[in-house]
Length: 229
Length: 229
DNA sequence: ACCTGAACACCGTTCAAGT
DNA sequence: ACCTGAACACCGTTCAAGT
Image 1 (cartoon, protein in one colour):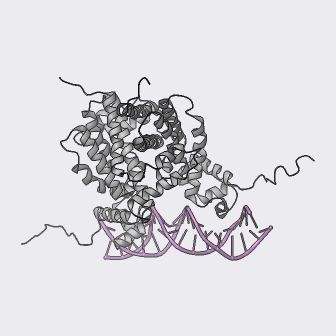
Image 2: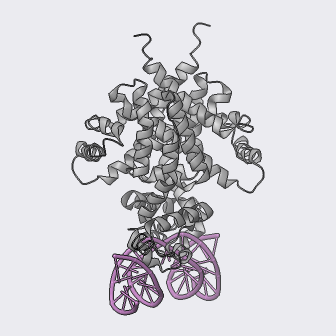
Image 3: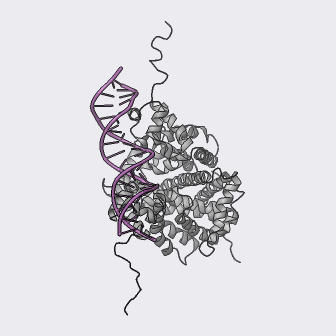
């Protein structure tokens, strides 16, 4: 009488879309986008490559699903109850950190325009933008600016981090980037050379949030909050 | 006596890095990044695939070179003599249009962090940022915000344009995007639904420049221009 | 110095055949 | 319904051999 048809034949090793996506995330984290292969993935899951296609249409869909799996918990956790500015900062930083932990989601999100994870991020940013009193006609441009800034700088940060990984400690990575900038032709690259000395010692997350605040300042400047009532 | 050793045996069909890059640009414009193949490219140039490797190290370097070839004329042409704001708007719009004409340079620029074309864009944006009186410590964040906004929105625009290409006239593309947004779950996506009706009829380039102006407004708000002397 | 093209070591995806 | 794994149609890259 105990557990007759309760759990319906859920074999331990049964393949499922969820197991496939989870294994894909692990593989993407470990070896990057080029390391995710239907052969390697099916070997990890102890099947043939064709088995995966029963649960997932193709590699593109698998990447979207993996990005969603990583981003979903981040999207629900952050940005409750505070001011609109704080809500925007919170989701921005949460996504920045997620890209830093899983660098492949950055390029994936900016490659696939209408994917569900990107829509979620847009929605998450757009709501506080509305709350700030941005007029309807400008809301799309403002949300676009924020989303593209987040994905762009987040992806850039993750890419440079990986590029100089294993060279030394973190401050030294930046030293390497700055070092290359400092050696550029002074006639052609005066700007990059002049800020090369400023680069080391900066906290990437702080610089990232400074950029978010810059856009928030633009909002406050163009559409000043109504005072009194 | 006429032209003894002037042009040194430049055969008509001689392979060169320049000819390879030019052919790659044509191929990328026609068939996109997935269409650029060493086999197809060598067929076009009437050689074997191995011949290309004498002039170009690998596919990644070829993509960087192709991006540079497309962006170089754009970078020199725009943004002379005007105010810093106008210089920023001019290069922003020039890059936006270049990405629209050659969608593959968008993803290429945001994939390869330290590539020469990206450094050029950064320099081109950073100079007027300096001229606006942004303090040195903030110049990197401000230039980052602008560059990532330009590449992000430009890439997004090009991607959606191509995704709905051949469906109808341009306003109808937007109708399709907006149509999908309008059908989203009202409980989960109130923001996207509310702006879906605003989307059609907007000029993408104008919306893009509105976003640039938003960041410029942020600069003016955080670091007001010194009045008088 | 520069080009040729076969060969190597892979890919994503399909599909007959199994259970 | 779900899985297996060989096979198809490709890739980027290398490299002996040519001129």
